[in-house]
Amino acid sequence: MTDQAPQSGKHAFSLGGVHHVAYRCKDAKETVEWYGKVLGMDYTTAFAEDHVPSTGEYDPYMHVFLDAGNGNILAFFELPNQKDMGRDENTPQWVQHLAFKVDSEDDLLAAKDHAESLGIDVLGPTHHGIFKSIYFFDPNGHRVELATDIGTDEQYAELKRVAPVMLEEWSETKTAPKHADWLHEIAHKENASKSN
Image (cartoon, rainbow, N blue to C red; front, side, top):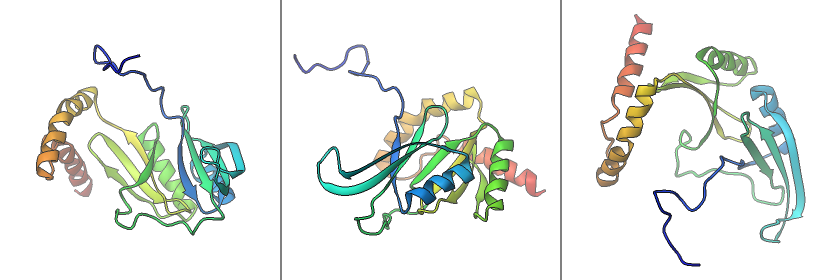
């Protein structure tokens, strides 16, 4: 077998989607209950072992899996023998987050009302030009975003067209490229019309 680059622009294999994403949690039971109550996620599976299968090291854990819809799975590890959970203090809290899709702006507002009725502080909706989002934190300190798409096919096509140019420009200058500033203009216009 030889090392050859894939032909015709195709990769050597194709991905079938995200199998699951895993984060750490402080308490598995509390986390499962919170995601069920706040976001309606079904708790589907748990793995619990004393030794890590991939490394063999002793580190008892509970690994829980939640159905985020559409074949997407969110998982958490509770690790009672490890140091208390922390976060990357060099990264702002708004950067690392879990974003889930909702079907409409009405669903987004209903989710906001529901979360607030449970005593959760919710930020937003925030207008991003082609989608709107709300933000809040889970009991582990993970930022959660709910988003609904509002863009047109033409807008998404334009963003895809300028994405490579923007990445190159960012790579060279480390200043925000202006190729998609129209996104912010859409958001500003809507915000201005609401305040009048």
